[in-house]
Amino acid sequence: MQHIRHLNDFSIQWVLIILAAAGAIILVVRRIWWPLAAWLLLMGAIVHSSAPFGGPLGKLTGLFSDLFYSDPRRLSAVVTLLLAGAVGIAVFTIVAAAVSGVRRLADRGSSRAWQAVTAVVVAAVSIATAGHYFPRHQFLFGEKYDSVIVNAKDLEAFAYLATLPGAHDTVIGNANTDGTAWMYAAADLHPLWTHNDSGDGPRLFALDRRGRLQREVAVGNAEAVDWEDIAARNRTLYVGDIGDNLAQRPNVTVYRFAEPPPGATSVQAQRIDLRYTDGAHDAETLLVDPRSGAIIVITKDIGGVSGVYVAADGRLRRRATLRLGVGEALTAGDVSGDGRTIVLRSYDRAFVYTRRPGESLAHALKRKPCTAGADLLAEGQGESLALTRDGRAFYTVPEGPRPTLRSYAPT
Image (cartoon, rainbow, N blue to C red; front, side, top):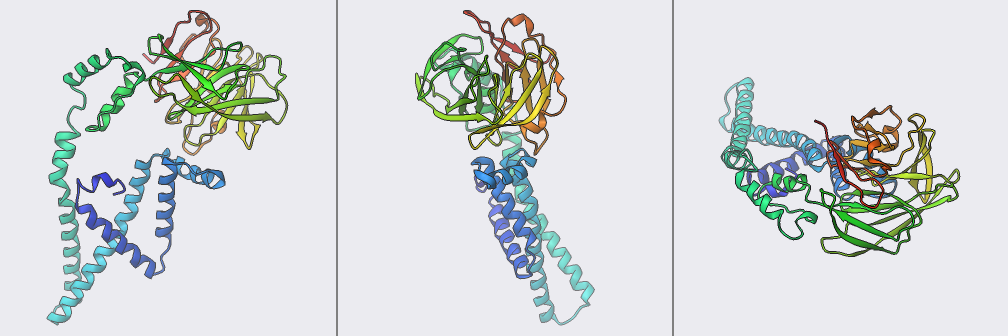
């Protein structure tokens, strides 16, 4: 009922929305406030999940909406349960009033008989309104959505599109079926972004999934002291100028900018200056929470003891400590697009953390990780890692003049 695009598919929903509003009014008249308060909370969470609020209100709303993975569809399903109760109240009130009027006119029959009539009419109304869904459902969810989304002709089209100029830096969506747009993205037609280590200028490189260079993008309003990691949140990129081998930089910088569109050769960045509250640290791992947008820097230590620093109000404050073992110096990390999987890497292995609903990244990192079944030592000086959106696979590329892009996925 929250998805307006379905109102034309199921016109009966207009009636149900009116009945829900009538039920809400009845509750207010009877001074029953909690359903309205719950509805307002859910609606605020739905808005926040699409356009996050800032400040303390955003943090509080995020704690609630993250229980539903900040997914407007999940939140809308809960709203529907609430509205269904309001519809029931309205239907019962209207039917009871109508039956009471008929009873006064008839002036006969027992109370129990008229109560039975009320129950039968309420049941009939419920069945009738539900019945309006079936004809449209047979087409929309039978012939349309329950059919094979990607067939042989679609696969032929994918193969053809992959040969066109720009195919490997473009996401193509088919509005007729929701799943097709996802399939294009899953086919890895979107670029991987990377950058050089210290000693280079402020620029990015777009790679296809075979590791071939597509284009170079200059980053304006930025300088490259020691760029170490890049993170993404939706269509926004973050570059961490956080390297400090000699631990002499109490201030570091994160650059934020919109992902360069296909064909773009330059982009303007917003500078986010941050200062450690406990002095300088060397760091090579930058994480950005896809749910809240929180920026996290994780320090690098050959002894395997790394600090998890969360950015707030221009400061980097230590919120957790990782003890991964001697030699496990962290060189990169990433968070899956749904925010549920966190992977940190050292030179020889990848550490995997699973995040629970409503949990911050820093809190999730306090638990003991599992280790991915991948030997990264053979890469050489491996200091990069990019997760796929679902967190089930990742890409790496080592340092060097002709590095090889590698993909790791469960077998």
